[in-house]
Structure formats: structure tokens, C-alpha cells
Length: 179
Image 1: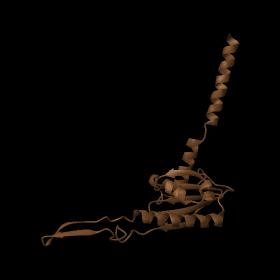
Image 2: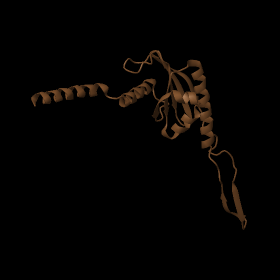
Image 3: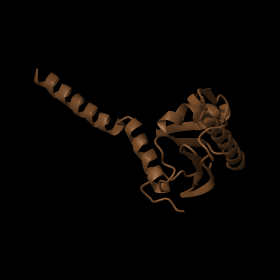
Image 4: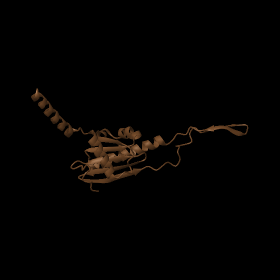
């Protein structure tokens, strides 16, 4: 898909946009005024919320159950590890295939550190910007707009400061000439 003129164009330097949610991810390639989806992944919800019946207990007394309980462990950790492993494989494969100069990471705040740690060191070094939020279902142009907005916020206001400096110098010159 051709990138709109007012958005970042990524001319001459390929960039990967890695967009993740809790159980899904998309990888985009932006290069020479084009952006395309390279790969998508989605882990299905588990059959049950727990991995096994380990630790389940019941106590009987007087021909009835007095107490029962369970120390079920949720599959949350298992799913996260499986997701991060698949994501790492996807990013490595796309890095080998397209050799991007930059990687932009869109991930929920609570997963940011885990996703960053799951990437190998050479890949983590290519990450130039991290944006927090679940943007998996967002349009490509919305992602590019977020990148553009963050760059504008982080970019020093060199043009404004130059103009201010010129005005201050003129004011100082006028003051020194008047006295």
C-alpha cells in the first residue's frame, strides 16, 4: 500500500513495525513510500483457564464434603512465553529476509519489557521507538501517524529556537546601541 504524502516515507531505509497485543501480533515493512503486512500471528484462547488439576484437594467428613479447593495455576505465564517465543522467531525471520535499519515497537505497557527482552541483542539495538498501547487492529496509516507525532514531540524545536535567538540578539543589539 502506498504511504500518504504527509506521513513518514522511509525512503532508502527499510523499517519493521512490530505491533503486538496480548495474544496477537503483526509485522509490517515500510520502505520507499510503501507499507505492507509481512506476517500475522494470533494465539487461540486456551480450552480451559488452567493448565492442569495439580493441587486440587477435597476433604470429607460425616458423609459430606467439608472443604474443597484448588491451587490451580493459570495459563497466563505459559501463553506469554509461547507468544514471545513465536514473536521472536517471526522478527528474526523478517530481519534476515529484509535487513531493516530500524524497528518500531508497538506494544501494551504491561508487555513492553517482556517483548523487548525476548528480542535478541542485535534486534533490540535496532529498536528506535517504542509506543505503548494495543494497536494490533489499527490501520497502517494510524501507526505511521503515531510515529510521526512522537518524532515531532521528541524533536528539538530548532526552528523556533533559532528565531527566538535572532530576536534576542536584535534586542540586545538595540539595547547596547541605545545606551
